[in-house]
Image (cartoon, rainbow, N blue to C red; front, side):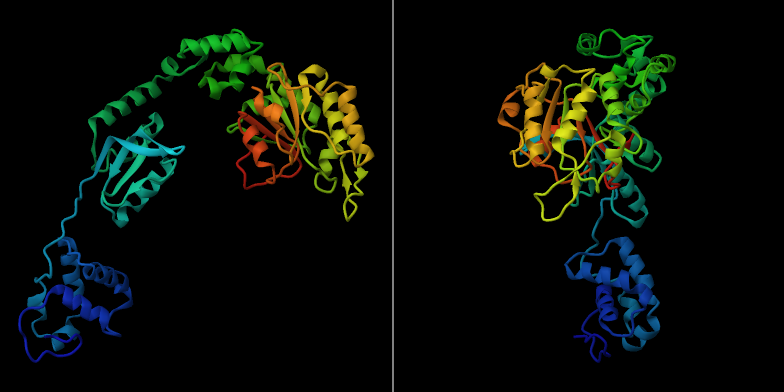
Length: 447
């Protein structure tokens, strides 16, 4: 039997090319640094019982011949053995296919069948850039390592992106996907014929239920209410508005309202360095963005100096703490907000859903203010504004009611909100944070 790294005095049969691979890998100071990655990769593969492919065999032969000066002196039959294999060739399915398939996907603890695009191809370094592209299209990565298949949810946009990217890369593409792709391209090229939107103040290319709902909520489209349709575009599925009508409609809108209409996400940030709360509440009213949830935090002057300057808040010392800091009393925030809201909302349409513990004069003033102005209303379908404390639980009467916010207003940039309130406010389709602090790690649209 041949001993690796020593001359053989007796040859009982040919060696396999994998044996010479092992010899090079296991012999110190022989393997070149530039060959480490390749040789160790093939060595691990063969020692797992996997055969070489034809391409790997040809590559390994050429690489071993680079070590012929050393191998010839120790193994005189080295060159004759290069065509001997331990195991038959391992075949690789090198097909490149893109098909439409059904795949079971877990959703909310259950399993549903989802129509997906299946992109299959064998891995190679040349395909890494295409793998990166697929990852950019997937909302979450789904990859079957056994079949070398990537899965992407079938949508119009994904079909367009996938086929456009791979159609010239020698892939066998499912005819059904090609037909789907062609339909999407036709619609894209003739978008004015198919895009849902408001054309000449008329809803087109939408379901009758969308028309009925919109007319009932906003009235028929006109120059005076077109901004309401634009604001609800994501909910209604609208993507087109005549530019001349938009320009005419915006003549009567405030600057902040125009900015809100341009948002690209439901998370918006309004800087108190730029806007006052009165401007923000004016925009909310212009867009008829009720019901409105206002979450009131514990705010210090040191944290949000511009917030106070912009809204003229008075401050008071909080002697309950071990150190003295200037804080804005809840009654000050509530009274200022109430003053700004009075032109738009009646007192019986406001519900303040928390109380103070009467530990300070400001706590008593807060509770008395609610009673005096009759803001202690239970939430109903007619309630336009609800105030909650950011660190307190949602009261049971509010949870048991059908009241849900369309807009949430956070008066401080913070991550430490009560989880119950977080879930409640995220039912809103617009969340505005009003502060002079900004967390760049969050995907906010800056107004």
